[in-house]
Picture 1 (tube, rainbow over the protein chains, first blue to last red):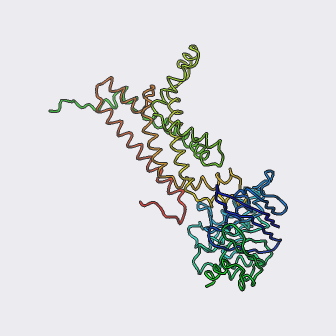
Picture 2 (cartoon, one colour):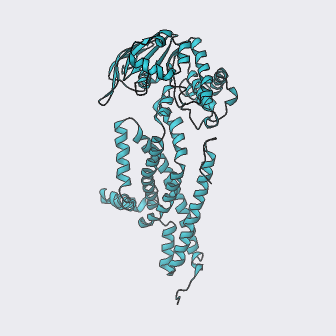
Length: 241
Length: 240
């Protein structure tokens, strides 16, 4: 579903990604972890073309992201993205947040978009908040609306960029529950997170990034039990405590 | 010892009263039309300046720096007295003789174009205060650049910049006074004209000042109403 081949990226002289290789198969959930500044978020933004990269290739569902002929707007409709700080549109209600792209991009009617949005709000557990503005919702509720907004485009892939890092501890679970549900439902997912419980439960692969490179990868348990590099061990010790 | 004889009746005596009323009406319509141009053009200029496109940024930037950095009075003279002299003499004369209300429309356009450079900067400031991730969230759902600005960024930015926007609207009203220099008989022009007939400049300029204060207070009330109308529920409101 996603092939990342020898991708490198620089901001001026500073190299943020170093020869990154990764493959995500359909239905897989891959968890990306690593310290801040290690290039995790940048990698996600390269996958949906929000950030350009100078070297290598990324193929999403058979389409090359860096090919100038690729219609990035169209490609992005296939890849949902959830952000650390939710990034709901503050001047719109939850429902309007979810229906905007289906109406403007997919040209769905208001009613059709709203019906689908209500189903998604039920799926993330907050149909009663449909007509609330984001500022009236808790962080966990906002993040669930943001997930519903991404799902509204019926993407083939979902990317999460530290979706629970800005949340109070008691709200983390409600968001993770939705994500676990998505993962077990067969969604292809790339999740940047330090929630190792989530990784243990659903990840087919966990990769550890540091200074722009993937320095360790493993399937589930092995990753936690015997990290190969001291850098990974150090990091895991800190976040697992 | 006060030797000045007050005669407030110059403000309503025939024909001065009518001049004054026409002046007030001219001030209101001229500034409102100019502000309409300013908002439309300012939106374009502001967006041009933040788009990830070198050419639009150059156009927007040049516009702002050129218009904002020359006195508005000079621009008025340039459009009204300067530019037509480039034309052949016959057509220059024809324009001054035959275009109805030429000073008025020159004033509208010039004030609009000038205010747009300031409004554009406010809009730009509002847009760059919105976090990058908000843009990316919109793009990630497949919205195009146009749609992202049209439905997400501009509506959000406008709510942020309502207070400085109000100030621009007020400045636009007050700047309309300068159009008297190209012969528009708006409030200031009318008060000056009545003074030259009656020698009662104190009364006429006092009246003009009161007119401006009343108009601007109305604008402040209007904008406060607009701000309440488009206020985002749940967000912290400006103190009242």
